[in-house]
Length: 172
Image 1 (cartoon, one colour):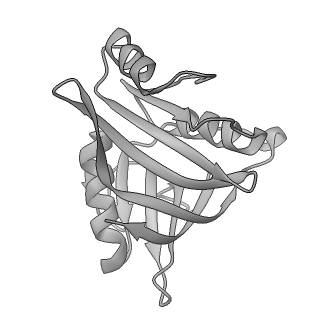
Image 2: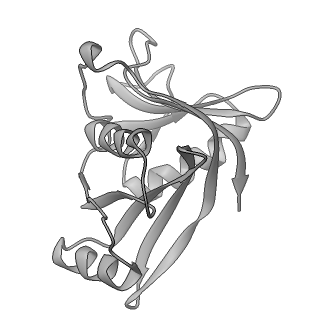
């Protein structure tokens, strides 16, 4: 089980992004953080029998970072990279239809390294998006400006199915 939570004082858009992540990523559960500190987050991880957590932080009211955290030896350890978000796009609630992603795919060399990290952290196979037998993927694409887009897609149609994250920097 992977817990998905926010940093302190989340905004509506940050909480909504957490909901979207749990809707599409298998084996996740949203944790309403409230005023929990790091010690209480450790207790929540233990009670959920989990060793991993995704934390969505905000800046200026919008989601700004996504951190991956693993419980090792009774302490929380960051899993590089921290994903610095340029923007997020969330599907309108009336268009909701979701399927859990079954694999991680990437379409460029820049995206492949992040895809490998996600594959290991989320315990999902890394697949070729052109020949995969899977239907739904968390797809990472890169462009010439080294900007990465992370979004769930339907592999047969290539259509995005929910949120879209634009990452302009990865802090390794």
